[in-house]
Image (cartoon, rainbow, N blue to C red):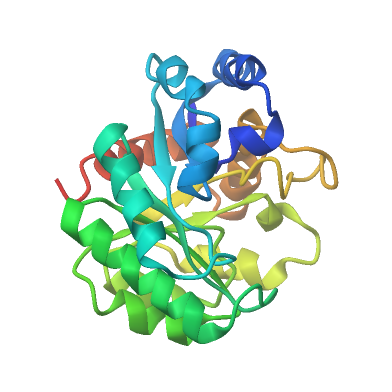
Length: 254
């Protein structure tokens, strides 16, 4: 049994009935739990029917303003309203996106810091998006005594160490399995097993042999299989290690 710590059901299917069906099918294929990510409070409210349906599974909810949005008091108010009304496990995904510069760096950093403050206020873990923005991301994280997950890690062992020193888990997605991802395949070898997680980022980044197709939560098992061979560890042992990490994650900041 395995865990997928990052997927977007509303981006896989708009229909909430089909979203639940995706989870049911993934559970039948071995999914134990995971985190369904909303990239804005608006998208959560548009899909709020799925929240009650997911509550009977071990599927947690995360919500935050993705760095394509401008900072404002209204956005923070909306996020706080969602936190107060729904069972939000984590704030995310939040962070910095410098590869596709949706907003100026200064605006991204302001929105990021505002949401880190909210996570600290409500004692929530954070799910961090950082692309081509390592130094600025690290500088923000250092300001807040909270932890969470570095989503879809794609950096060097030294970058990972600095995140680990702040107490974060490092999560790898399906791109770990790509033929040319040799640097990433080297980086994972430096991650302590008790700080390691896996994700799909579904519907994106489907692992080999599904690269280029729509991704689903159950497909995370192919990333586990690849990682087990890469790390020279039995697959069942890796499943159990990550399940234990998942249990620890659920008590994070509590």
